[in-house]
Image (cartoon, rainbow, N blue to C red; front, top):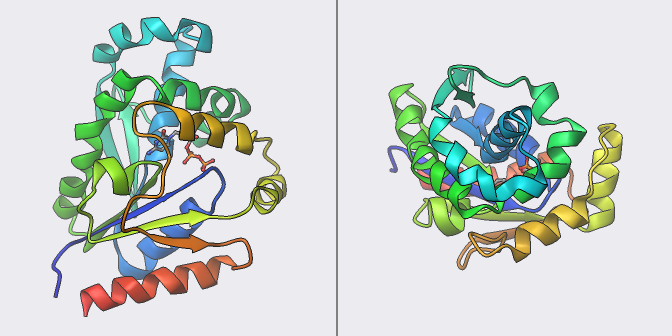
Length: 220
Ligand code: CDP
């Protein structure tokens, strides 16, 4: 029986990672870490400091002034920057959504988050969770290549656009995927050995049940 499980869930924009991960974290009492929200928080912070996608070259010099912390809110980890959690409305807003893939492609931004993200497993243990569900683009490939379980979610672009429209959010999904998949550092990719799940014709419960089966088998 595994005592603490690390589950990596990667996938493209609006592939259902967040709702799936949230439901799994409830089912198994694991800590849920949405690393996209971390890239979004850093982007929001830098935009508020007047950085833009045109001034990315100046970003590395600003990174040491970002002091990261973690707040655990029920079963979700939230990033603090300088002791403050940036509100969801801001990190999910149109301005951040349009800019985040550009900031996330800066190698120094990714390097600044690497140890922090790995440290989330210790945060989960310290709070008594039975495991960690971490979702993102490079979790199974770079952050936790030795995770106990690694999944890659995908769905065709029409289904994903429809999901965002139902949430009332504008999002250039295909463009973000293109930027995320073509960047040099830690591009979006199906990690070798990960279980790929096509959610185009599956609802949330079906995806959650599928992954739950793998987790339950590991815990048994
Ligand atoms: O929720 P959604 O799939 O729309 O995106 P997200 O998970 O909130 O991630 C926002 C952006 O952060 C992505 O488009 C990537 O550019 C970046 N990201 C990343 O580069 N690496 C990760 N591990 C997670 C997100």
